[in-house]
Length: 285
Image 1 (spheres, one colour):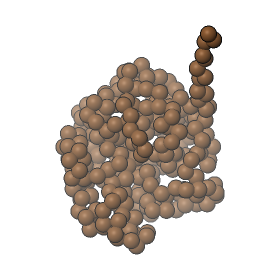
Image 2 (cartoon, rainbow, N blue to C red):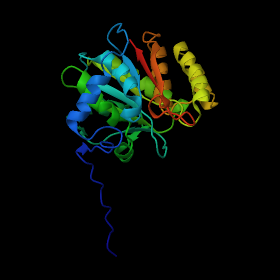
Image 3 (cartoon, rainbow, N blue to C red):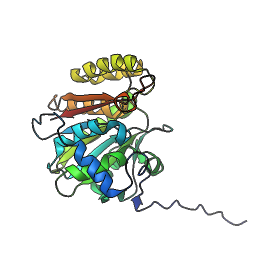
Image 4 (cartoon, rainbow, N blue to C red):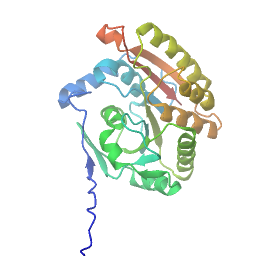
């Protein structure tokens, strides 16, 4: 009887774009013009060099002003690595997904993966797993990259991590791993948490729920925010990243409290109040 060989899956060197022409303009010049305009006149006062930002993972045409508010704060700042704490919009999985590809494609060129930091997380715990399949389908990081490339000064690398399930185990683990990474590395890191808020309620109910969310976010208490999200009193599709960021802040003795900056809903663009998406810009210095 002949031995059956298992065909190994070939990991692509570069994670290709999937949302160009869908969530953001396909044409490079048009996209560049859109981003530059959204970064202007945000009305946001910069108070220092951001440690972390919270930004949408939505269609640029709906949330451009919120993307602009977040990313205007890192304009001309230098970072070696941007850690992107990502949700998963399709099926969940057990673990924290790391990417195997060496770079991400963007309309403005390729962005390299910080392979050294990626390997650090891989060795930190067995819960950091090969998440290549999930990274190829999830678009949260892809939506952040055009803005990062137009704001961060100089070259940078990224460390995208997909949170398979936004539970206590994985948010604690991710916050501890990132805390250790920051402690042993001399690199300059920025953390980006992509999230939208409500996606299924009418405008009035959405605003009411989001006011509660913003109040809880300002408390910078990971357990309170996690509990209210679990009880569905508030909503956010980037739950895991949000809670992980607050847990990380607690590990760092509340040195980087989160502050909400700007809020908007899709109704401002679509004029449809029957069912809206909502978005938030926030920063931690």
